[in-house]
Length: 208
Length: 193
Image (cartoon, rainbow over all chains, first blue to last red; front, side, top):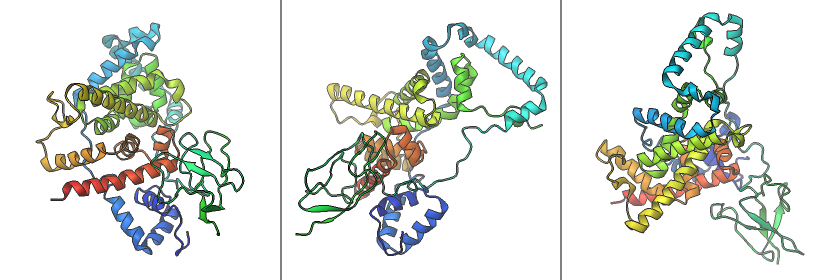
């Protein structure tokens, strides 16, 4: 991102910056770029006004809700639980057994074994923020399941026929007579698999 | 020795394995971990607490009943929020159809008289602001609303939202961008005298 250039995805970069989705290096780069561009600063201010933590949080569940949900969920799960284990669900049996097992584990578990368990990473380990755009040369705007790309024979220019939440101010549909592609991404003309995303095409007016 | 070192926090996967063996405390632990965030997402999408609880319960049951589709994919939380938010949208759609059939389309969820609707007289300013947001959110297309709520109330990153909804990060970003532009315009319009 050069200081003067305005990348085609600048609005989304500002969004990712405001939402804290960029890694430290990219964040500094985008921050400097925003500071040098008043329209980007204004957009950042607007996006902050509708970001996380701005609005009152949705209501919390009542304490009883958790217990009641547990009972309902367990009852609905009964048909898929193994038959032989259903007796474990009886509360008195369950609480006594859990207490006994916990006591046994507490006194009998060898320290080495405990340490081995304790060092195992869990799913809730904090993750280093990553730049969500880092792996893309061009920003994919949709998965293949969301858009249809068709090509015009002859002076072929692919045309996007897309859903309504794409980026109309970045990509305007045009006819092959009006526009031509200046640079294409890696999957410009075909999408071999369902996970291959079409790229944003840099287009320019076709010379008359 | 620190008790936490002796009994490290089990992963979601460990808890799920125990639940499928009939372990009720494991289910309680999994609920304690994810019930509140799932409820917030459902409540924001539905604006009705009893319906939100139904969506959360549907979500947990469906998530635990279809674990074959979950394994080796995203985290359980992401998987759960996908199912809960879809359940909430389904409940909202069927309720809207029911309401339009019997009471007309203009009924506001906040006015439901069953004692479980969102409070109107508690912490008025915050409720007012929450109500304004809920009204503005209700005007968004469902896919934008779901994406926004998963990100803001579900506290999911772009990547997690993309995994949850099975869409690209670029689509997540474009949905969030336009959702927030529309929200800002809608809120500005509502607070103008």
